[in-house]
Length: 381
Image (cartoon, rainbow, N blue to C red):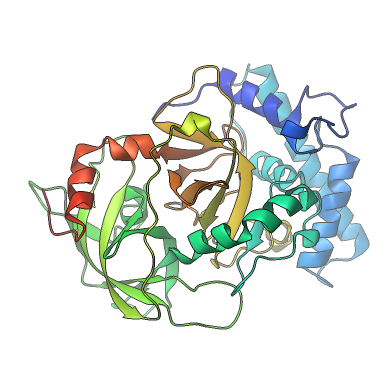
């Protein structure tokens, strides 16, 4: 995948925030979904305060909520100054990135909790009312895609740690789920869950970890819809730009899940989209700031957004603005007018946009397709 440059970041920010001037409160253009544009301002701060009041009632007083909101808006403005200037190589601090993400969320890019048979009420998200009609028209398909998407939960058998969500997977064949390579092999100091088998594209699960897929890990009463991960028939090479892995699974409880299909259409044909994932709590972030994002708890969510327009689109990659944080890795990206997967989400950044591997790139990957063609995950080379 291409590494974004500062110029492209600047163009994408202008697409989201408009002309980066003060006087741009609301756009009247239909294609922008009536979202507010312009520099982050007091209206954004007021909406962030409302989010805090709803997500953390009683945790902060009025003055404290106003202070958190004002600080996030300030950091977002600083971030835009850095990107627009293009003189500091677009290097943003963690707090500046959080500020951008907070403003993005309250400007109509919600991440709704998935309930048992519904989605969270959009009225709980300031600025998100623009999606009302979309949800009303396409709720059935959104929930269907959500049911085929699950949380990859890991239990450390050696140290008896409580299970945690490592990422998101979706069922692509009766006994196969798809996710990212980095979900199994996290970067930096992350703990690898498997070992590569020399001479093959397969890997072997480490015996100290138990991996399961929970398809009903959403907000609401517990429901048993589990699969067990039994093998890793394919994981992309470390230097492969297609960050993908396939896990072989066996049914444990609940209904059999319906596989999602990879789209034949080009990513450039997509405009409005959504992504299903399991966002986890932001690390090293104060509780009050986590509350702006609804205190992510690894439960299933659906985030709405748009594909970024690009002067030089990459057919192997889809760049979008749906809200994503850690845990969405491996989630499917879909359009509203069909139930097929358009891309595999693998990376998110409020500066450069959130990135997904297009269905085209997945379809043309010969080694990946060899495993998918088997339908059972028994081909390891």
